[in-house]
Image (cartoon, rainbow, N blue to C red; front, side, top):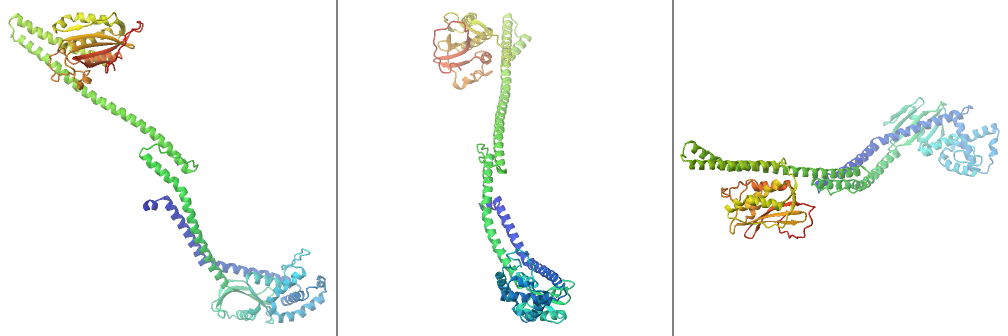
Length: 595
């Protein structure tokens, strides 16, 4: 059972699926370990570059009127402070003349510089002020639906909130910090100053270098952490900046992603294996049934059929096997019939060969005696052994008699051969069978007297039959001679005819010894004699009954023999003349009387 499972399609499909799932899981894990962190760093680098491009474009847009970025940021911070501290101010106050705005910017700049440490908290205060004034965080008025471009402070703060980028802006002329990043602002100011002076970290790796800024990774010995930093000058050539992003979160994200992918992959592998178990079972069960069906077909059990009604490839295969089974049944049946016929033909050929050998042996035996007698008596005559006329006459009579026997046997063989090969077909005619028997008895009266036989034949009027009269006379002659040759006991011969349905049965009975049962089926075989010594006591050659059987077969009638009390009865049937009036006699057919 284990070996069959190991070599089954189901087992191989399961192994392939588990192998593929495991390979995919390991590949994902390896890719995450080796390339995910690099991918994250590259994406964060792109985010820093995008932040620089957008902030730099905003700086150029804000400083087109000749003001410095420091003044713009100070004014924006002051405005946010005013909005947060006086939420009920009308929006119309923003329409003050340019002189008042300019004075407000100058007054707010110093205060904003001193209060830069409040920048992280201002996001929350700004959101509260926006909610009170009916504005959204992206500068869109809820009432008017107008879209307002974000301020510099909002833009920088947005990058810090969304991308975890801390950014510090420094006036390169004065060295004063324009916009800080909370608690790390002073530290970042000192770092960018060292970078400008060419004092970098020991573990600095430059990711990409641009004309005005550079993006690199640095190891901070103070916090024992790695950071991605971008520093340089904005396009106003006055503002120095530094952006910093911790890489610890990236590595943590990679580890979490790997862990999550591993857990999900293992669960998917387990659930997929269970699902594949049932799916492969559904697929392989029909295949197993087809295998069992083919095994039964290989044992020539063609009653086994595929009974499913699937329309897929398995269903097509099953129906094809049913068709193959039917065709094999027909073909093997035809082969069996052909084999039986061939076997029958072979047996017939063997039998014919045996009969030919036996026929040659029998003919040789039957001809040997008369030829020897003729040769001996002829030699005696030639050597003058018979000087008197009486002896010469005796020798001549013997020669003539033996030659006659040989002639008779040859004629019988020719007649039998013609009958068996169908060249001597009967010529049916209407005649009286009783008259034929009477004429035969009258012609044989001398022979009957010599045999001291008593013949009883008492017909009641004519009895007409349809047959070849000449051949039926030969049948009766053979039966009568056979009866006279085997007479014994009371030495009586009885001939009678009976009617049975549309046939006339002719019976010839003689007293004598019964025929052994084992010899009865062979009596109709050529040259067969019950006398195993094959003596010439009865003068027969063993061909007469074979001729009788051949004549009856040619007439499509029957013949046979039955042992009776104190004797033997031979019989044969003939077609009754149909125009004759119906006979009122009834006949009780005995066993084996008629075939």
